[in-house]
Image 1: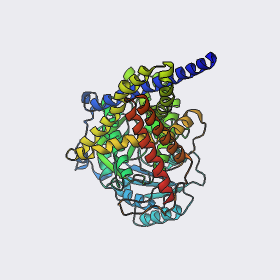
Image 2: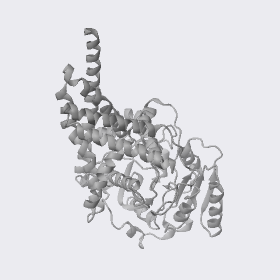
Image 3: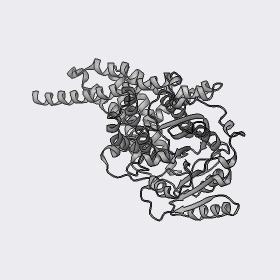
Image 4: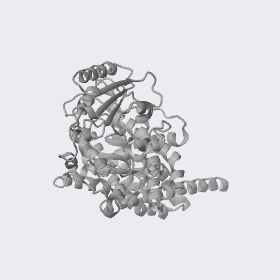
Length: 511
């Protein structure tokens, strides 16, 4: 009997240690969210190259100061794979950019295996006949996926500036001139990338798209802005930005060994002394995923790619001459998706700890302390960041949007199972299999997507999420029975979040 009790004590002690480590890591990430929020305007004097933040009138560079024939050639690359609903829309938007035709090379990098090929060939032919400099490049084998397509097209790039757009984007006519203004204003600077902010074509389509828009707004308006202004490493976001071709070549080109080729190249360039400019005043609208399965697939790819980049790059980051704060911020940035397995550890270990806490004295105060006090900054740090993004973008209506921030927290908790698998795949896996996020050209509430192609089949993740919802409900009952009232609100949030994500996945699959 004593031996059995000892085994239980050892088990509880191990779980308590795991719970404590997860809570402490959550605390660090939460504090960092506060830091990024508080310092997003604090270091304007430290901007690289002396570039003024939020330059309101970049178009002045083109207002008589630069003759059309003196403008640099810009190549716009459009990597596309099976996007029959949005392929034509993208090509038409890029060809409508306000830039001299003989200075604008458009490369359609098509890896498609379906009727998207015919759509792109037709629209490219149409614009060629109208005098546009547009090329159609098709690969039979998708080696390297998006990174492979971009690298394969490099020899045919005619300009020193390469703008990149994914298939779901629709840039405005003045986007290129505004973004290029940074390069032309600082021709001697070592600017590798000018990254612009993503806007949203269909943010009001559903609750899911509203939550995604809040999430992306927080990332761009607060996180990217703070990193840029404080001189931390930041990343090209894969689209809606312009690369300087010599920077790509100097940094080793596009690599296909991760699913986050944008982060990978961005960090390699910055570690070689190149700089990234982020300008949130220049925007490019894009379509948000309307299906929860597509959203989870997108997050899975980002999480796996982020952890692959962490494995690949953190050694070089810590071996560089960056200040310690810059190294720490890069570490937090590259490992941010580790929050999702930490969420699972917290919820899974809390129940056995509560069960055995009183009978075996294994830290009632520890569980309460960790959940009650250490979790406060971890809980409120990210919501403050996202709420600040809404306040900055919507100064007159941000209060009415505040409930979306709370619901976004639930969405983030609800996808923790899917993203935990992605994090583990990034840390342990050797493959870099790419599964793109399907787009359906959805903009208005009445638009239908359920019967279109590219539907993602239901996997077992939804069942696991509903089981985690049931597990959290059991934890709620345990909190009430044993008096763990500090832990109770967190368990309620977990139950709602897993129930929403798992239930919505099943419902959309059936419909």
